[in-house]
Image (spheres, rainbow, N blue to C red):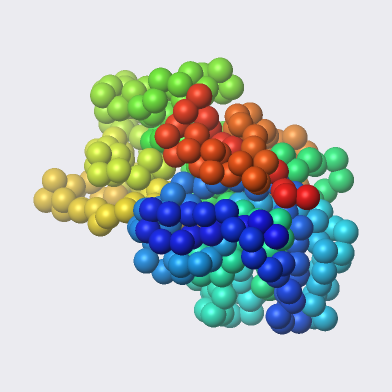
Length: 346
């Protein structure tokens, strides 16, 4: 089969590999029908994910059809259309039982697919712990509608859930890339009083204005004064930082009111500094969100009910054989790209 492979720092290649096989009774083999590229894949490519294994098939954002299941798999069967969770998790350890599946203690637990074990930018993928890592796609929900459930949408949903948002709050989201927009969609479910989005790219600011006209949009240079003018207590009640730069990390806590919640959703490629003398007296609560894919079934239900729609994010489509070009367009942010859909090889 065709599989996009991490060869060395700065180098991915589309290679021929053997089709994966069942190794454990809890495994499933999924034929990938639609996948996508995530910024985390770029972090792997450029050496910012030390745990990534050279030779691994990359990709952790996909939907497909179950082809084969191990003897212990009970929740899915061959022929089921499924979303694949970015995290594989056992469902039995302390962290899984408390809903923190990203911290699963199983050897294949947490973010393994496309990082430590072969992922889904391929024709087929082996999914360990299939009963927990796969969710059946409801009838009437397309592959495109379900594509982002297991990763960027799960990230946005988790971030909104832990941010303690109320209907009285002014919420600032920093970054309107794919994860930022998924975070925005999930924040909108909380119905806060006001939502502001800060984004540097004029194209992405235009995208937000076009699709979500009730959301206030601002560029970084004006963000702090804009937030002060559009909040009630000297800053945003909740800030979600989804951009992942030193500048936006500082902006997040500077734009927060005293006693606010600041949720760090972004993945950074270098350490950030908490300038505690400058922050003294703000009494901020920092939460490091990341992704915890424990809500995928609920997210699929919301999609089926028409309450979440991420299909506008798919701006470009490529067949698997052209994945090099897909990466080029995505990484260089060409032609107004938000997300690309990569069609399965068969």
